[in-house]
View: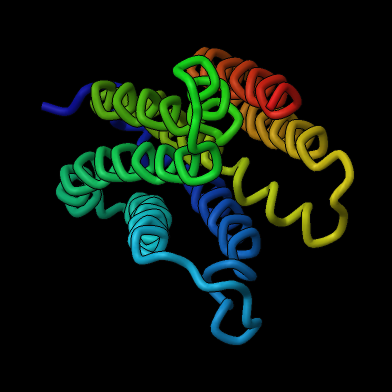
Length: 228
């Protein structure tokens, strides 16, 4: 028997598909110069591990859009089946992301201490990566509450945006990049909450606490980047 809240699965889901497309476009544009279009733009070579990381992240973005599309066309059966693979892929995203960040820190700071490593891990958006894992885990555990599940998955995707925003801002300026990224993250979170609240005429608690965590972690990331 369906849970009562599951009746809202298809209601108001098309805006989430639009959000999924917008967020995926931000990811593409942010990484176009250094990854997606690098064969034509001719940027510096990247390692095999960075290639693998890029492919895994791309797979996640494609899956995120596909899942939103399946719900929009009311194919919840396929959505649930892909969800199992999505949970596994999220684990790979976090594990590979930690590995990539660790490798970057050790290459750039050969004599790093535990304290310095922790500071650099935060500065390299490591906390945002861990938050992504936490939000996806919460969303999976609350999958029988679709109204909460879809909001947490949306905010999990938002939590991955800082590196894309950072590269996008760097296309235009090298000044105050970290501060601009924080502003863009705050604006993105605020827009998600505002649009959802206006559409549904209520402020959903899942958006409040997940959005607050995203902002706090990005503030901590900015502090670590300034201290580095």
